[in-house]
View (cartoon, rainbow, N blue to C red):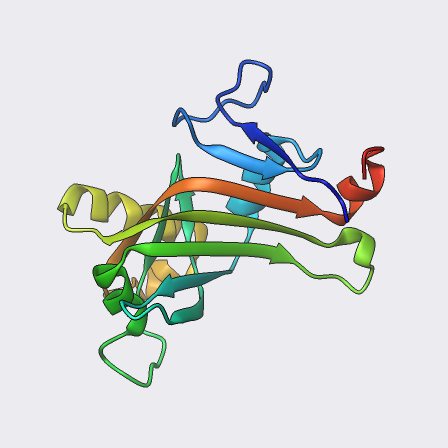
Length: 173
């Protein structure tokens, strides 16, 4: 089993400082700037939330990362229910996890990044407008059909990452 290393993004020895002091990232030799690039470039992620009774819930989402906050807006794609479980779970516990990954038939290209955090529904109109604008910048579909549903903000409290290529290159692996 490969050992993991924990780096603080604000560590003076790490030249890829975080805008939020104390945000930890658990990685092998994957540089923090590469981790952020992978997250920002990803088109889809899986959002996990936790219900009050501890049950997990997982859905694919469009998202944007601004500093140390992930934003997601509920869009108009067809849904089975009007009361979405992810919204109820965030209001109940706030526990969230966002997984961004890349799959390839060439397994040496596999990687994933996990962002743990605390979610909340955005109520501030200025913050909401900025999040919607950033989402529209990333997703052209949102220019034509802006998401009208609630905006979720996830304050990232921890980062974990793994890359097959970087794991193979790590002599400690």
